[in-house]
Length: 461
Image 1: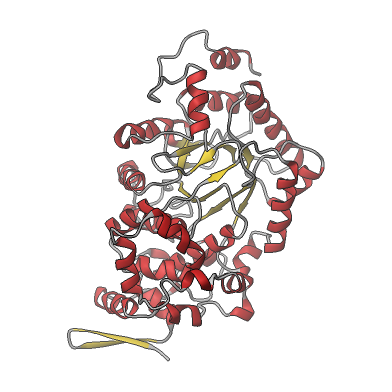
Image 2: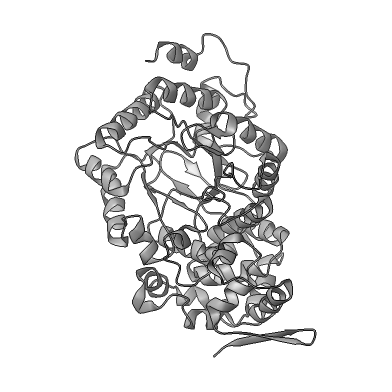
């Protein structure tokens, strides 16, 4: 079949849709590593021109990963909402971009469209957008989820309190949790990346966090980010599991490299919901993703990493998660080389997820061997806040001492709230005020020496 466009006197030909999508992608090291990137800026422009003229219907009819070879492709196509798609079925990719940016397109419009948006459609339109377009369009989308509080309301931004410790020390984890709570963080989830994956160690951590949440009646949820199979076993033993975590990717083969299947995710979703631990909703899944995961597993089928990342959101969407986040710079410079590539990827991921109806947060982060620094992260954080990001990470000092990467701190969340007037999840905001941590405006109060959380910190093991 093939696609083509000319720049000046040079005519560029693209073999198929996945070739066109790859060549239209803004530069990034992962696509260069896999040998599918445009070889020049001119070729990239030609690909964008051809992609802009492509009818959305064509994208539906040409899967980038074969239907018979991948259960993620089957999930995408078998669950596609043709009725919702009718509203945009006559548009090209370029016309769809104009539709998204139109003043007439509202949060309600995007909510109704979300079931019609396949990941390939979302990825395609993102590739012909400037950074400001990704911010403006994503800002309109509102994806609301609930468990013990309400995440994603307009004018709010939540924070995952991430109290990791290199030896899972209870005192160290407790101190980080209480520190984060005193800074007003933790409404998205109190989520621990464990140093040990043993069921006994995971149980101790779950009991620790559940004890704090129950003792102070905090309207939030806990999660220990262990493999879904481990969590399933713990649910069967009656361990207090709020959210089920799993890393996911955009192809069946990449998910297999994580040791997970769609059936396993469905089983976990059903099991966690049967616990009925939520108070205002039953969104029980927490997924993490990241550009480059399929390529790193040699499971990318020659597809560009950003399109595959969007396909991971289709997996997430099928299970109505409370939280999904792109750990955007975590995989390393082999996939996103520098601050410019990380910033672009973070904006793309957030846009695609929100457009597809997924509660997308971003771990604004980088590894120490990437050509990036905290100034780059400040830029991405600020742009995501403008774009209405669902949640970010809260890591003590922004330096994760267990995972050894740089993220965002409790103080960074305060900056975003001050700069954009963003509130926390309403139930959590009310708890902070009742606990004397914030005032009626949501601003932090000076901590009292006799505050119950500080007293507990002094008595904790």
